Length: 544
Ligand code: NAD
Image 1 (cartoon, rainbow, N blue to C red):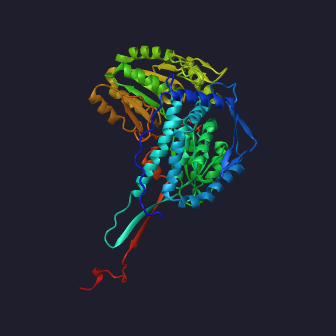
Image 2: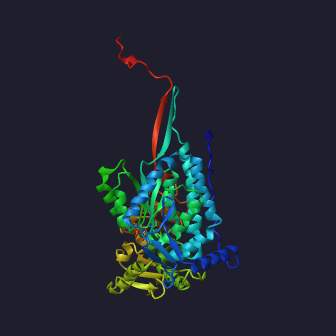
Image 3: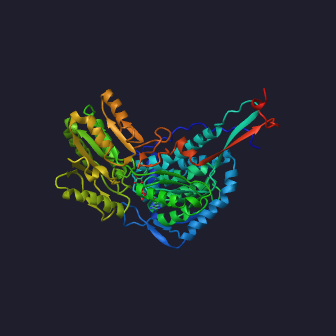
């Protein structure tokens, strides 16, 4: 019997543990790291709730210790992609018919398992597989993912309560159906939480999913899949596979029951997907939902009235935490000439104190970048500075070494050209470029900032002058989907700063907010008339 309204109250954000020396959590995490490092995991795909092994094994190694083998994953063939779609579509009817309170309980249970039993294993997997330090793993693979699950359950229960008005004589109601088909979730390497959120947000709404993570995140993605299974996710609702992106994508986009894509990754990949979906448009049963959060060239604009120490801390954390591999990371800074020297001197001094090395030494602030391709691409931007004919110079850092792991020092490039390449292009590494402007011209400089890159993901302004803060907030209205005042442009928290950018940075559907969930629902409006008219005639056309 289901005759009551169930309430999933607004949750509190999961508290962030601090892993200080001597703390219980530090010991538990160190134990989990040692355990995981001592094993070689053989990671299967999960199709229709079954573990599937192709035998085509690909190695997984920590980016900071490439001599160590963590295990393998089994790469998918085209047949596995078809199997995953079939499994999803077979599960569709019964999952859509499962009552909301039971669907919700699966995700609430997964959040609880992650907060308790699996917290350290999940964080250890993220640290080893993606080279995050303990704190960066805690805020991502524990807290943010737990928050995504709990807040989305709450938001969805709020949506289900929204109903149209019913004047006397009729009943109007709205059902929030899942989409008619399957949703493809394609996820990036840099956040375990995004990996978990992109398939679970549509699934929570009653959709079935095919989930393709980045190869470099499979190690932690598979731990989350184990949690979902333990939480009771029925077979076929989320199918985790590892094909190459283009191969898996093309099979999904060509399917008549392709109902949508939930993507986070680079802008080029997203634009390619959109084109393929457009080319297939006549094949589909319904118009697919296209949701993508993509690249950024995130700015820090320093006003002449700014507090220097706040700027230095904002740049040090905002540009270099997780090696600058956050879509929100500060990667270009505009400094006023009256403060520039002091900011540069203090910033360089701070960066020199940042220790770099493997994740199991907790004193390291900086770890490795994700893989060799990323290392080579970032290193090229740095080495190209030498050929810039004086347009740019390396202010600090710049050393790159891939002998033991993919290590790149926190690097600051100082440029005299506001359109120098590293002021415009997304580098996705520990590289910040700074440009010094004439403090009297700060208003004109906002235009330069706004027109320098196609992106509009995050941005921060630093100022003490309230009129300037108000002016900049208005002038930069379209330059960032997440805008920060006197704070670093990273570190959005679910429920507090819904995340997403506009322009080339994505569809801005704000992951972890009520807005995102609407994209995975197809409402049906039902009108019931209690006493039906029995004559088609209206009074107006009667003769006088
Ligand atoms: P990526 O674009 O290289 O890969 C993302 C996913 O797409 C992976 O699963 C990859 O295998 C898959 N893929 C690659 N080519 C494909 C294709 N042709 N068809 C289908 N799938 C394909 O991105 P990444 O290196 O994993 O992540 C970094 C990027 O993600 C950066 O650009 C960053 O700004 C962006 N990002 C954005 C946000 C945001 O919220 N806006 C958050 C995190 C990361």
